[in-house]
Image (cartoon, rainbow, N blue to C red; front, side, top):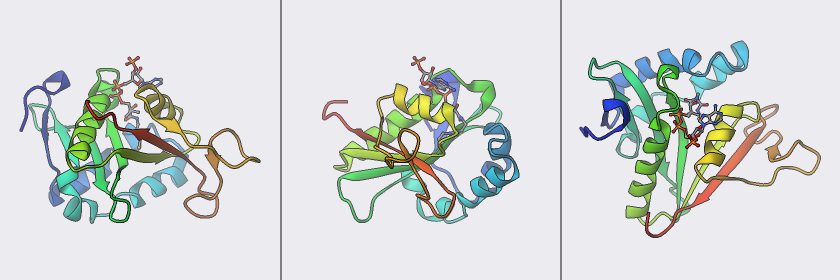
Length: 175
Ligand SMILES: CC(C)(COP(=O)(O)OP(=O)(O)OC[C@H]1O[C@@H](n2cnc3c(N)ncnc32)[C@H](O)[C@@H]1OP(=O)(O)O)[C@@H](O)C(=O)NCCC(=O)NCCS
């Protein structure tokens, strides 16, 4: 546990018994983005395996009451030794704008650098303007999209109709 996290939150690695409670907040935390389809896609993005096999590089933040405040699911690429990947992250809307996501990302960056990872990748849905603004604000670049698509949009990236925007950031050597 750490006690220097924003808003007095405690940070720890997730456990398998956190799976259901993280799934339970997704719709509210994402503001119902994408309706029923969005809800189904989000749930499928977080199968139990992330809470079994990726916990060492992931973090969950809790209030003193134990209520979930934020999470980041990330891992180091198996195939690209310089790359780390942030798969999914969210913050309780009641706690937005307090630097919590920034702190979770920065801790992941530090962990990644410590393991020799120099680039972090992430993706989001083109319609997730909050995610796009946040990633841009903390220094990610949106990779070029397809010429026929809106800026940065990669059509069918995750399958038919599943367009995505891909973010990349090169980690500075000193921080
Ligand atoms: C995107 C999200 C993670 C940001 O969390 P947060 O803790 O509020 O973000 P921070 O407080 O660390 O914000 C960092 C910067 O990003 C900016 N930012 C964050 N959300 C933003 C938004 N919706 N619109 C514009 N800028 C935003 C902040 O203004 C801040 O900039 P500043 O340093 O100039 O003040 C949060 O809104 C969220 O959980 N959204 C729903 C889930 C989601 O879309 N996750 C994204 C990736 S899977």
